[in-house]
Amino acid sequence: MWNTAVLAQKTVIDAQHGGIIGLSVSPQGQQQVVVAGRQVPTEAYQVVTPFVAGNVWYDDAGRWVKALFEKDGELMEYRLVA
Image (cartoon, rainbow, N blue to C red):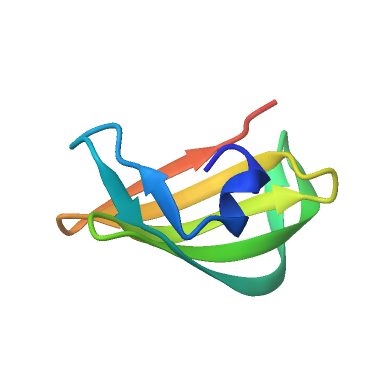
């Protein structure tokens, strides 16, 4: 998810369980995300696999800035801080 190239894929390698799994990506439009204390315009995408679902955000340069995933009822949030 750290590289925008994954957004064009229909399958990915599942590094945790092994094998190839399906991937569904849906654009969610532009959203603002706080990076290093300032608002940054981003493009958001919903991402779904058989094991995890959530959203990822990329800035105008295609740089990953945030991810929010749900797995087994737990939320995991990752953010670019610098």
